[in-house]
Length: 277
Image 1: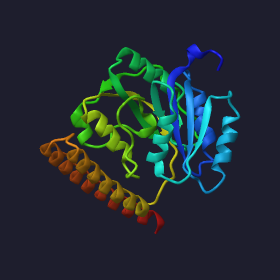
Image 2: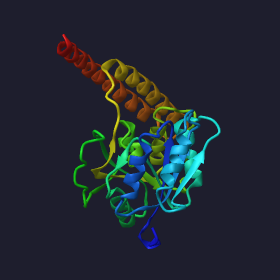
Image 3: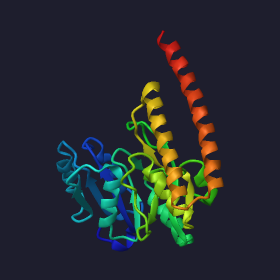
Image 4: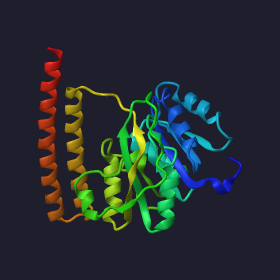
């Protein structure tokens, strides 16, 4: 940590809520970066347990000052926690990581390489996959191709997983704290539809380590996500960032996607029912 020139000008913001069992792995994946971020901000979202103590314990494992722990007085959800971390950022770029996800070791190196090649990029993301926490990670990619994401792509669905995003700290937007679902999609839409250049790398550079919910729970989650997606499209229309024809196009695509997901869920229930009978 003594060689400041080898650090990436990136602040990593991690919203934390009852994450004492997973935050260590997440931060270890940040520290293992081949181009290490210069700053990490852990934001406890008023957890009812001793998450704050766990965050300070993790911070103590690394060089003094590298990790800052912020404790919010009341629970505001991931949007409020990320915004609080964003306000504490001192680096030109902000990266987001959830407290139960991990990064591939070359993630920041490849994203910063793309940003140096095209300084007009305001937001850059990459692909993600679900991986069992105990399984060995694949070999870290050393190269990645950068694709500029066109405006219309943002009409279809969210192309930018939150834990994949690095963006400019000085962007005049923040997460909308009224949203607890797809709040990230709304922010990316505001950035992209305002004319800022957005890009995505073609490599998997981070992993979700999520529980495998049953079909019933997944169905309810998808319903909530679709409702929130409709709200996002209406909000982008209200703000004048998308036209009414674009809004109608996005709504029709959303209806088709919803029907397809319902069909897949029905098939999953039949398959699970046959397996347990």
